[in-house]
Each structure stands twice: as C-alpha cells, then as structure tokens.
Length: 196
Image (cartoon, rainbow, N blue to C red; front, side, top):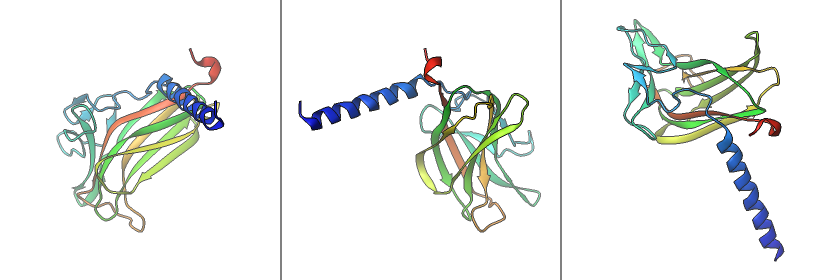
C-alpha cells in the first residue's frame, strides 16, 4: 500500500470512530426537538410567558425538522421590553465532556442577540462551571450552532437557559427581535469504562 493510502485509511477510521462515539451519546434534554407543546408552553421547559397576559414564547411551524420549533421574542409589556426565555433544569449529567448543538433563526432589531447559558452544578446545587454562547449573527434560515466543554468531576446536574439579550453597546432589548430554536441536543461523552 502507498503511504498516502495508509494515511487516508487511518483518517477515515478515526472519523468513523468519532461518529460512533457521538452516536452513543444520548440527548440529555427532553423535548429538544420542540415537537410537544401545551398551548404556548413547550413540554418539559419553563418559560417567561405570563398565562392569559403575555406570550413571549410560542410554537412555530417554520422549523428545521418535524412540525415545530420554539420562538422566543421580545414584546413590550407596560413600557418594559420582555424577552422570551426557555429553561430546563435539573438535567442529570454523566460523562467527561458535553456538547450542545442545535439550529437557530435570528431576527435581530438593534443588534439584539440570542443567548445560551449552561450551568453545571454539584450534588448540593452549587455552580461548578458556566458555559455561555452568544448567537449574534442574524440568520433567516436555520443555522447550525454548537458549543462544547469538559465536565468537572463534581458536576452532577445541568440547567440550560435560552433567551435574547441586548447587543453590544446597548442596554435595551428591541421589540420585534426574535429567535427560533430547533433540534437542540446536549450530549455527554462517557469515559471509556462506562460505555457499553
């Protein structure tokens, strides 16, 4: 075999192994594809909606896959700009590292940006690590994003929050800004001895 063929074969084998490792990871989020709603509330998620008063989180039929995505938008509420936010808490965590991946559409007014925060907690509920990501690039079609990091050994739970924040140089959100999220996955990579 030629040296270039051996190198190519090894590279292909490594890529296949990495793909299998990722596929072994199960999505830790419930309803990360946002296919299940009760009214404006995505099942298993908490929102900033005020029932029968203000809906800043709602289902959208424009989606990456399936029937629905979730929309978080900014609306005026008695002179204040209220952002839609979704969160899922007390997600059990195992593994050495984790990756959040998914898709978003961003309509930004005044440079408002999407914002994602993952908080890793120990058995007593103390924060041991925070991972954050700004989605500042407007996108009219679903665009993939991902973030990854190591899991501290004492971290047993995670909380995730997704919302909109004012862009750089601004203190205020703007009515009309919104972000859609779909097909969110948080996948933990298990240490070799824990894989089955």
